[in-house]
Length: 129
Picture 1 (cartoon, rainbow, N blue to C red):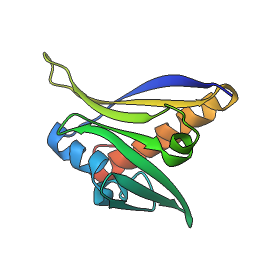
Picture 2 (cartoon, one colour):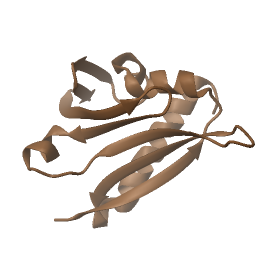
Picture 3 (cartoon, rainbow, N blue to C red):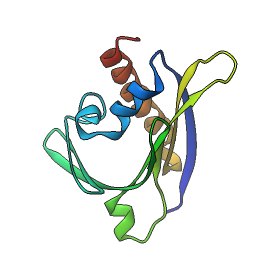
Picture 4 (cartoon, rainbow, N blue to C red):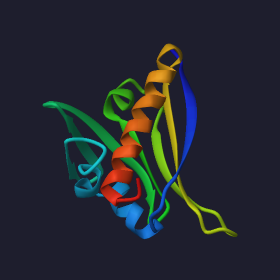
């Protein structure tokens, strides 16, 4: 089944440097994205309620973005990914997080709600809720 790509934007009150620590390091990601995160090289293991999902780090740019592919997709030869990008408005200097992800058509609302919840956890951790 083809997955659909979607993008979401979340305004966030934090410096890009600080945000980058939270989106790119296992310790940062385990504060808001999963219960626990381990990494070995470019392989990241995300743990939720005792279940594990592995993802491969595809690319990263310090202070800007990180991109992963779930190993289940990798093994199926799929090119889906999820990316978390930090965007700074040149004029206002407002900071946003842009999430790009893929999901099945009938799970779009659910997937968006999940990201809403994840990012609101991140804002709480940052004290910018």
